[in-house]
Image (cartoon, rainbow, N blue to C red; front, side, top):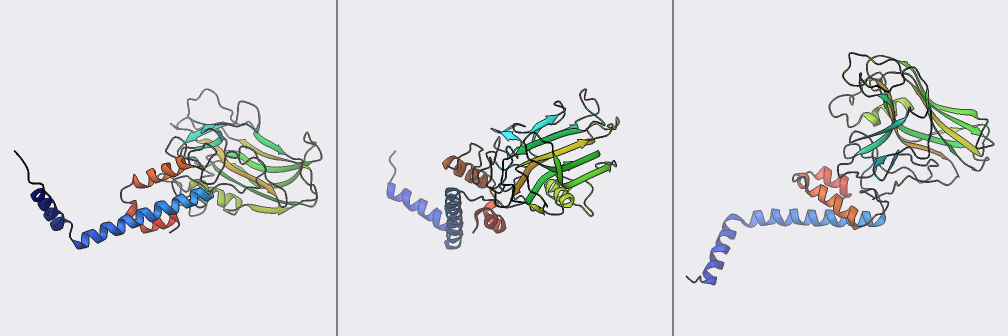
Length: 326
């Protein structure tokens, strides 16, 4: 049997005209233009190295990159999308470890689902064999040499915790990388926070300690530190070397708890000095969404793929504006 191609084209045209009338065609054209414009904007921003999302987070636990003047190495406690404490001194050595989960802060798209990382000193569950109640665990890093005439310090970190005897951040200065160390600043010091989920519940009228808790890190950190941004402090005497130190001590866990109820975590640590250049950003590159230390086509395709994988994103004008800067 032979088909008349002109008749077939006529039938197709009639169907097209009937079901895709003028109004529908205009809608499809507008949607297409929005998609093309959004992808074009995304390509331009990736090419310029600009971060797409803003502080504190725009998608789950994703955060903006740290300022380039950060003096600390490995501030995200990860390397090649795996937990890592390289650059940090841990005492006792079997206390602070690493955490890897989608509920941790992140600046790169690890594992394709924005898995984040953090330093962690906590008891995971009531039946864990290795834990250290009522022991002070130290996590520290020495930076320098720097210009000792510069005395304007800046600090920030993200933290969450359950019950703790103490959770403190302290900055020390010295004329030598080996000390002796003089305390110059205590950005925060939480003591005797022993009620259920005490630190996470500490913000008055907090709204983040429930559900998927996407804003928990930001809410707790802003309350404890008094700001969502780096906090400044001018010290009377500058030093060529500084030690950034965190200490945590947690009580005996509640044996009735199925999951851990003591200890805490730390991520996105920032320490800088006005007028002093930054150190290693820890792979923290604006626009690097797959964590390979580069901003290239792979990052572009990754973010575009995630964006269009959610079919209703195109109808969410606020999301379009936030993610693509339209």
